Image (cartoon, rainbow, N blue to C red):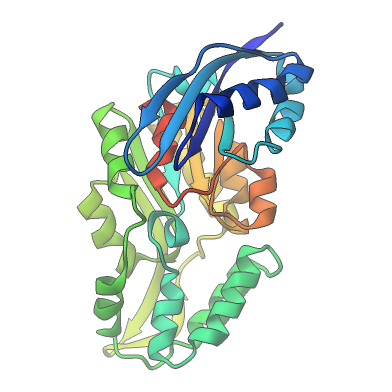
Length: 292
């Protein structure tokens, strides 16, 4: 029996012909595509249509839409869009913010290139995240703690981040972030955005200097998934009504557990595994998936 989905197309500019092309790609998998409604602003445009589709053909439908060159195309289950209570959880580095904080810190130690190469390999899933984090943090040993203040001032939110959080909160939904980065950077950022939950690693500081170690359990892919499950349960939101957004391999479990996993400017392996992908540089495209 067919189920209801939303087809969400996004690009800097869209014409009705793009919607027609998407509908044509879905026809061979038996999808019935309704009329499109337009949204967006001066930054990007969105077209959304109701789709009736056999859930068993969802993978085929998403594969077919990968052939649409003119726009990002997402098929979002009605269980996500129509849920009375929703839960949004996001990665931080290269998702909520534009940079990788460990690289900004490593620059002060003269090790940015070295650390960036390790970060890239870890995000592609080629290295164990916890081991790679310990190796990268060791390069920071001896840095004065006030470096953290300078890095915090250099951090830039991703365009659309504030709008996305505000839209979810205005609709009465919770927003969380979970990061393989560091609490000393994340906490004031999360407080400023009014986030409901956040979690990251804690850099050890002794006598005013970084020791090159983190305190406690490393926030890896398993911890990210556990955080999603625990926080959404606390809010009484089923996983089917959760949206997770990330870019690296350490986000895969979190994306897989959520009702909609979104790859944001993601590594190829993450994009391939996610339910939807955003290539536009605006994080608030995600609000159109959730209908908020």
